[in-house]
Amino acid sequence: MDPVISSPTLIYDDRCSSCTIFAEYAFKYSRGQINCIGHYSNNGQELRKIIFPANYNETEMFWLIKDNNAYGGRSGLLPLIILIIKGIVKSKKSGSKDFPKVCFISEKCNDKKNKMKRIFNLLRSGKKLKIELTSIRN
Image (tube, rainbow, N blue to C red):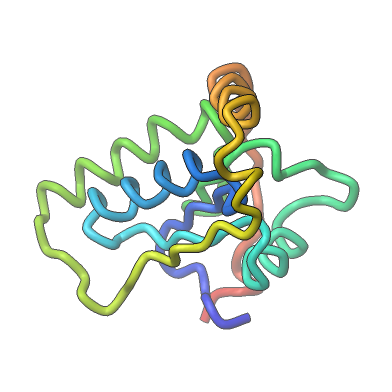
């Protein structure tokens, strides 16, 4: 796998425009300290297979992978805010990383009903999983 999780990684729905905007702001305000990978990208699909159990619906929310934990949805907001604050305080922008701007299905990306469903799920759902990342770290 190309991206190694050596820094916090945000896995987001890259088929949803508001989710992509959310991830872009997280990346921007963390000063590039958070890797962003779309659920449906090749890297995202590979990473999901490594982290989550089989038959688990991990695409229902965003996930923040940090310190052998996967924080999903509402549970990921506080760790994400802390990373953003640390990025603002350090104010050292990483110039080597770029945010991957992709939204695969344009009509689904701009569907208002889908956006409202995603926002509702974000506020309603939250999970924390203990994961073992030593097998994919260098």
